[in-house]
Each structure stands twice: as C-alpha cells, then as structure tokens.
Amino acid sequence: MKKGLISCIIFFFIQITCVAGDFVVELVEENYRETQGPVSYSPVVYHTLQVHSEVGPKLLILIGNNSYYRKWLRQYIAKGNAFIVKVSDDQDNLFLKSDAFEIDEKKIHPFNLTLYRQGEEKTKNGLSFDDLEKLRKRAAINKYGNLKSSIPATKADAALKVNADQKAEQEKDAQRKMLEKHDQAREEEKKQLQTSKILEAQQNREAEELKRQQEQERNDHEEFLMLLAEQKFADETRRMQELEKRWQELKKRLLADERILKLDQTARAREIERRWQELKQRFDLE
Image (tube, rainbow, N blue to C red; front, side):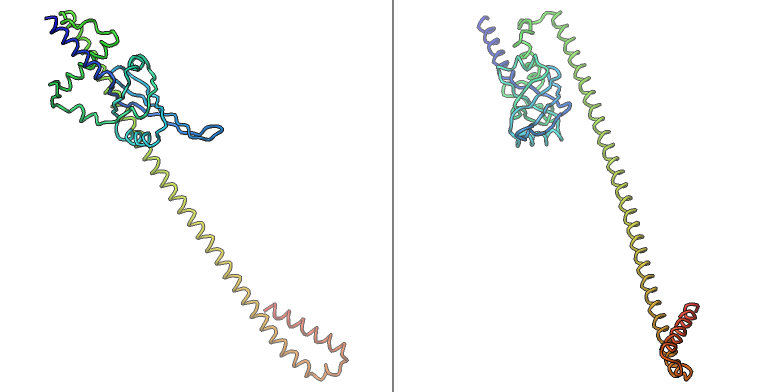
C-alpha cells in the first residue's frame, strides 16, 4: 500500500516537472515602439504584450535582439492571439507572482488555439486534453504551496472544488466576453479607419480635379491672350503697311505738283511734313 502511494506521488511530481514550465496565454493588446539611441543612433525597441494566462493577466516585456524572429512574431500577432510561453524552472515562481515579466522573444511560440483545443485524441499516457489541463493547473498550484493535500478529498473539499471550478468557468466566460468586446472594438476601429481613408481619397481626387480644371482655365486664358496679341500685332502691321502705301502715293503726287516745285527746299519740306501729318490724322480717324 505504501509503495503504491509513493509511486503515485512520484508519478504526480514527474507530471508537475514536465508541465510547469509551459504556459498558454492569449493576447489582449500589443504595444510596440522603435526609436534610436541619443548618441550612437543605434536602434532601440520597446515591445510588450498584454496577455491573459491561466495564472491571471500578465504583461510580457520582450527582450533580446533577434530582429528576424521579432519581425516574424509581429506578423503572426496581426493574424493570431495565442502563444505558448516557455519559462525556465528557476523563474516559475517569479512568473506566477509577477504582473510584469521580462522574457526573451525566442521563448514565445505562437500556435492555433482553436485547433489546439479541438484535439480529442488521447496522449501516450492515456490522458485527454481536459485531463492534462486540470493536471497542469493542480501541478502549478501544488508546486507553490497552494494545494492542501493529495489525499482523496472529503465532501467539503469536493464542494469547494466544485465552487472553484464554477468560479474558474465564470472567469473564463468573463475573459472570453472581454476578448470578444476587444475584437469588436478593433473591428469598429478598422471600419472607421477604412471609412476615413475612403473619404480622404475622395477629397484628394476632388482636389486634384479642381486643380486640373483651374490649370486648364489658366492655360486657356493665356492662349486667348496670346492669340489676341498676335491678332492685334497683325492688324497694326497691316495698318502701317496701308499707311505707308498711301504716303508713298501722296509723296509722288506732291513731288509732281508744280506749286511745290516752285518752293525752296525748306518750304517744300515743311509742306510735305504738313501733308504727312494730315494723312496720319485722317488714317487714324478711319
């Protein structure tokens, strides 16, 4: 009897050792900021994950400088929200007691929580997923002194266990509802962002169309002014040519007029200038 009890206790603690270092967490929110050092301008990254775990809410502070793994991890965060956190044995107590826990980025492993929970096949030890989940929770509690005894529970202990299970289920439901609300809020935010982007794009198109119309009107006006100036120049040139033609004809008649020929050179020049001015005035009046 004693040997059997000792074997059960040893097997129980072996199970505790096997599962104590792995924690399943669900993402609530990611906080990321990348900047540069003040002097060396080397890249500085601030990266934290707010998660829900089986031991309560935690803030995971990611450390490490593996940029490739961190980039891949962030790409997964955009699509999924479940991770397995590997905690070494010497930090289990610190992880359970701390609200904020520093962890290397390569110790966070994403996975599909839905498929993980839907597994119904038995393990090599003949335990189902629910059995392993209960065993892992009991192991974590027992390791840090919160489990009273491994002796078969009394009726009072059974009642307490039922109440604890109900409370745990209520907490899970509350967490699930909170995650659903968070997902709905994120969807609403995405929709608002898409709407704002559509409005901004439409405003940009309208501004571009107005700018194009104004540019076209300005080009048309400049072209009209240019044509008007060309027409005015052509008209002026034609008038000057016609005036010059008339003057040449008048000059020939004046030079052939005997009365003008009788005048001296000075009087003749004055008479020709007077006739030229009269011709210009009549031409301008026309």
